[in-house]
Amino acid sequence: MSEQVLGADDWQQRAAAHRNRADALLALTRPDTAAHPVWDFLFTYYSVRPGQLTCWHPGYGVVLAGGQARRHYLGRTGYAEHPDGVTVTADHLAKRAATVEFVARLLAATAARPAQLNCFGMHEWAMVYRSADVRHDAVPLRLGAAGTDAVVESPMFTPLRCTHFDAFRFFTDAAVPRNAARLTRESQVGTEQPGCLHANMDLFKWAIKLGPLLPSELMLDCFELAGAARELDMAASPYDLSHYGYAPIKVEQPAGRAEYARRQSELAHAAAALRRELLTRCHILVRADRGATRRGTPVRHTPAHPWTNTSASAPP
Image 1 (tube, helix red, strand yellow):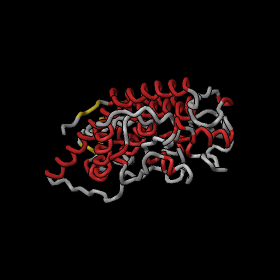
Image 2 (tube, rainbow, N blue to C red; image 1 turned 180 degrees about the vertical axis):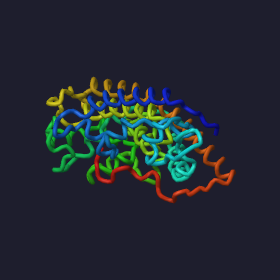
Image 3 (tube, rainbow, N blue to C red; image 1 turned 60 degrees about the vertical axis):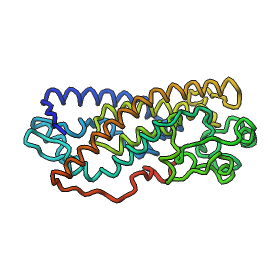
């Protein structure tokens, strides 16, 4: 993989533009309240700090020239000195190779399937079905507990059609057998599909996990998509979010289901372009890692399970 050297003026302009964009997004998604049922998810579930969004990375194969690069990037994870400046190292890529290869497999398998647009966001409903426990206890259920259970049990939503394990794993015990399939972590690559709101939100997770190996502009593109998906996710949920300025998408009614499917389709179309870009980047990284191995660069592949979710306890 050939290296690109960015002069100090070039990379500093890109870094400043990135920070300005990130700051604007953070102003929207981290409102000045104690807790927010829509936006907190993007930071708690994905275990992301605001600083991870504002720090710009050029991606693997790019060298940042000049003394400022050494001051700002040496000491950051993955970076080291280069004859022309500072760059993300082949050793860091080697350490992340298992994750890169898994993400590539998952993205390729997901992209190869047709989008399913008939779940109507019922995963949030399944997480409170027949339970006194609710995920967002400061927000009331729009239809109350009995009304929520009745929607889940209606013929329109029988069976439930969730295809995303990291949503399914938070179903209540009573809701689990109502799903069309019993999802597992091991079957994730075989079940995710490109219409799924959470699979498309997770593009942000994969961009964060791959960190400095990817350009940060792509990571922010994924973050913007995740924000739009989260808004739809919660507007169609059983919670009454009117206090936060969100009109409900009443999926228990035909008009609500039509609106949900339309917006879900729009998000899936936007996600498809980002998924292709992420997959292309992953393929480039896989080839670069294998090339380094052939050249004798020390490689230490980690035997960890890279598909483990970033947060074991936070619900969607």
